[in-house]
Length: 220
Image (cartoon, rainbow, N blue to C red; front, side, top):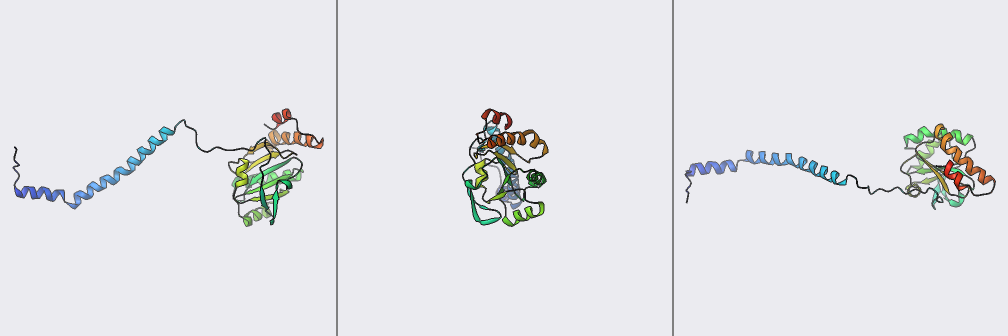
């Protein structure tokens, strides 16, 4: 058996070093330094394993279906309840907007132009404060024949929106025929929205359902 040659004084010195607070503090500092590094590599591994896999967020769109059933207050008079029965019985635009939305501010003057051209626009005031929304319309003008107050955002969610502004072209039977993500401006109005609305208006004047082939071509 091998015997230790350390003297009692040497053993005490070694034990003292092991119990030295400074030494312990240095070891703890090293451990704290390693924790963020371990977390970082763990995150990298998780992200790598998720590559190529679909996300859990699925957007449900109401395109080619009736406007979802709703029962919500009128923005201008919250004592009044608006339902699908109050929507226009002719083709119209359903515009999702909010006073908090910078792109809505950019889009708003063009909506005013459309209102002057006789385009019927129904607003969906999305997740907004009533006072802020009314002040917004007072400042910039009101292009909407009416605005529905969707303070919880459930109706907009049923429409399948991803944000604001978004606009839906609805035919005279209440079927959504086109979905515009982002602002409407002169360019996409002329190229996309107006041709779709023209086809729907023509069918509505003839008291007929729109031709689905034309709808597919003009409202894509």
